[in-house]
Length: 628
Image (cartoon, rainbow, N blue to C red):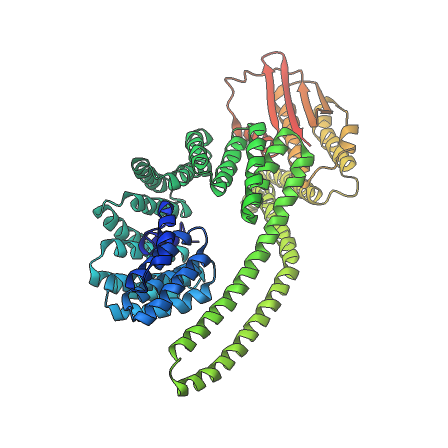
């Protein structure tokens, strides 16, 4: 992924200096009917095209072609070179990359005749930009290298800086961060030397993006803030929204929404200043994420809806997916599960569309690269009859190879679509296996180790009276405990047809096994609520384990002769209350211990809440609230 490709800006600044000067357009058009057919008219047609290029590149191309026709009659090499450079640029802006390649080759030919190294550096860099847009980094780097040689010969710092900048972007797209840093640093030094603080700010921002991709947040933040300082000093309104948004995004990745907020507010202000719908989309998505992190779900929903509307204007599937995702989270927080589910479905469908779009784009890129390669060869062999015959033979071979590649891609695409469902099922199975492995390790591993150690001790005892009976009794107890834990794990994974009834029966059995030997009277009320619920494996597991731990603590430590257990539903929450009338304890003085920490962690994992109320001489209450 290129961090912020600026090649279009490079062409804009270097190649078409008259853009933005729309106030001069009328006067230029008025001069055209009376202009003589001389070199000045060639440059006049070029200037008119420059003024149209930003709003209508194909109309600009028409004026530049008139300049080419007149320049050929006059044999005006300098004018021909500049008009051809502009034509190549105009077609690039119009998305007609094959035509841009053809005219850039002609521009290279005439520019060589002028022997102007600075302009040759520009035309080769334009050609590199075409290959960047065709996602062909290897070819782009080759043309950048040629452009670099001419820029060094011309001693043009601005050209050199822009070439280094785009080389850094190309390496960044390939995740070659060492080379990326090297060329960005070279570009930065030259921009600062020329006091070009606007472009220096973009390099700082690109460096920040590179370090953010590597999760080096402190370094990324330092570079983003440097970009912001330069943006503020130059009043770079086109980039200030992005700079502030980058810092806000970085803080959100670190779950620091409060620090992100002022930067996102400024980003929104600058987006309004530019009336930039794309930047609106980015900022509102980030703001919705920020509000979700702060549990301000109403504000998150409002920002998310705004983001989705601007994403529709941009017709960008990625932005629409991200907006729908934050909206789903916001509506879930508001309790509007219908809208949350609808937006979640939109996000999933758009994600699938993005995969298809990516596949189509890659296929189209292969076709375009193939076509461009063919036209390159045709141009190079235009005046060579013998080589043209050989080229025709090569063309047939390339068409055959291209057809085979396209068929292979089509088959691969079909296979990918068919296998996606299988992959999802395998991921679910792997997740389940990991959970089972963790439970076996935590619940059963320690007991088996204890049995092993006790068995070794018993084997070393000889004769009666050496504690062998007690050790074997302990082995038997641990083995029984291990069997119980294995039974629990199997039940948690596959409880049976009636999950609620199975959970109730298991709770009653454990209650009897714990309380009966101690002559403790224990009651379990409200289990009808459990029998009506369909809990997930994770919910069922953690609910049961919190119940076991709470009851176990009451039996072992409370000294109470009665324990009351109540299960109830309240405001879409499953409530569990374990209450004893024992000696109690001071909750402020008591340590947390593994048992209490485990119960709290299990409640937190389910998005629930665990409360422990106790006082000396009164008893203890353990209450679990679980959203269902």
